[in-house]
Picture 1 (cartoon, one colour):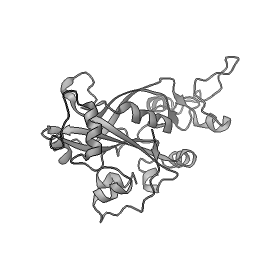
Picture 2 (picture 1 turned 135 degrees about the vertical axis):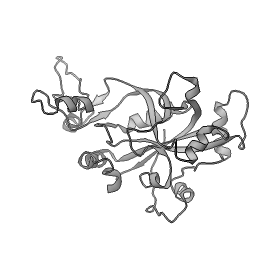
Picture 3 (picture 1 turned 90 degrees about the horizontal axis):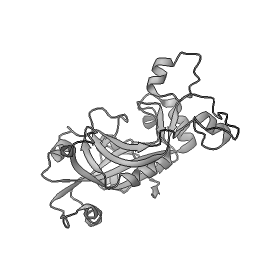
Picture 4 (picture 1 turned 120 degrees about the horizontal axis):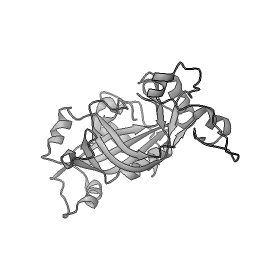
Length: 263
């Protein structure tokens, strides 16, 4: 996955969204161009689709910062997610078990990267201190996913009128892929919470600060929670889903408001 580093002027709310998306080479929603149709038709089992049959929609899908949870994706995991989600379904409500919930398909992905992020990005979920640390150490990465839909699909009107504008990614990840930021800083390499040395002793003395663990045991002196955790080890891409409340509060159709957090 090629990581693109955008070099763009400050967002202007007076400029059309399409022109600002072109600054970072993000194709806007609407009729696909020839390049997009070639990608889309890789996933058409009954022959080539035409531009008058489908609509393409870009989504701000994920990034490497903390939001409603205490976990932040690593940039390699976002890169893996970008590749593994291409060709997967766009569904409704994370309903993996109903064919009827499938309304579109992901056909392309972009991973944008900057060495810094503005304050309104870092502090959007009230986790400024930890997000400042993440950006200082790792930079700011954001995953853009492109999906196509039938023009006549109810999903298209759902996007148009804002009923389906929030999304969440669905992936299968390594359950042991949680990385401690404190020990990683100390040793100069990724240290997993469950990692052991050659003698079988734990390298990391910290506990994973998952939401429910800190909720129930945050004041318990027997626990030594790290300030947050890195999420690593994406093994399989499952879907991109329309939801009512995403974990990442800005994840969704790339609107002018969301573009302020992308470029």
